[in-house]
Length: 498
Image (cartoon, rainbow, N blue to C red; front, side, top):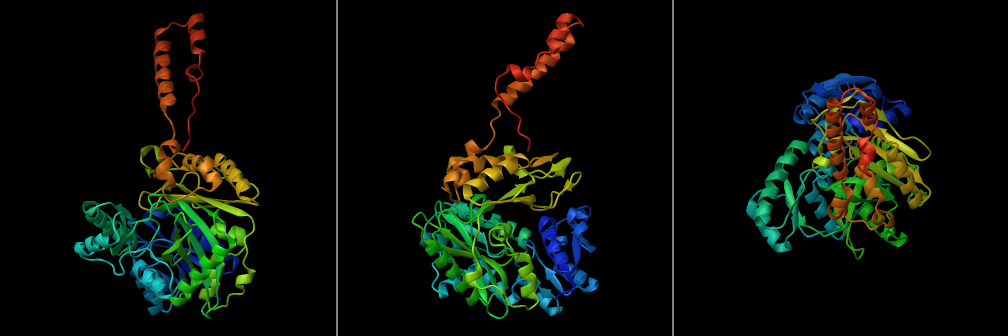
């Protein structure tokens, strides 16, 4: 077993990995940019090394600096978390060349499945259904235009490396396609250090269902069942749950077996996620492999009782999986809601700044994976995720009710967050019925955003009231006037704290 691991990430995932290491008796090294020197995750690490300026290319995507930090601190392994270099085969190769264990798949396997185009080819070879699209990363605009003509619009442009919704844009005609390619390339380069993109046919209103898979170095492979990830905004998952409301036991077995075959064909080792899109007739299509621990992994841990991060470390150290497929079962239901520093009132723009106060919900079946604290300044340089609220109960409806209550009790003051927005999604009748698809938010956005008609009236009334006070002498009449409350006089209204 490893004695020391470097965590090549930040925020809540760095804390999650550090906690698992501590429970296993493993020392940890944290890395940080100058913007993160006061971040919470560093308090969970035994050592900390500054790796550069705030820009990701200067710090968290800087492979030579991270490798040098690993060598200087004498670690045996590196855990990449998710995002940044987690799916970068060049980084995995650099670790291998410097006798450092990369806690994830080999560079060869990562190049195969981490590259979305290459993984499509692998899936096709084992007979998995795939969405029509490119089987090479395009360089020339004409290649994209020819493929779009073959499969028909709309199409979606995607980053060949990485995930998390970054570098993804939908195009409905040639003009939009050219614009989308340029945007996707810029975003992919910034987020993953590689500008390669490809396109595939865009399915209308599919469900997004993924399977968590573990495979060790000895060829043992199991899946840990599915996660429904259909609630997305700009291709970014924001609410996930397990089990999926629509999967039968037979369909779960079929999709799970397909996921294991894809992972095995790629000679993939460690934790990975095989993602599918499902149409309204319950036909499923292979989408991609996420070659890392997923943001939403906690809900799988809640219903299976299996610690995925610890399994990653054990597999990387060479140990065999001690579970068979028959040992895996789901108990109860779990939902994860991602808490972001963003402003739903302003097109969901990031909302960096100082957090004045944080109060996390507590209670049975409630888990919060968080990287924030009262008084911390949220930097503007990185993904705005703050924390994850994970809720478990014995049934789906009970879990929904518990999640709503937990969101009601989650307080973050000083910056805007999406907490009220998440609550409104979960409170919709469609969500309760499990009527989900990837366009859910787009279709219901007007009803999910807060209404502001009354608050404007309240502010105007308060301003007039203040003006009247200044013009009235100190008399009994003035005292009576000052005791009136404009907030009560204007009718029903509410202020939503974000």
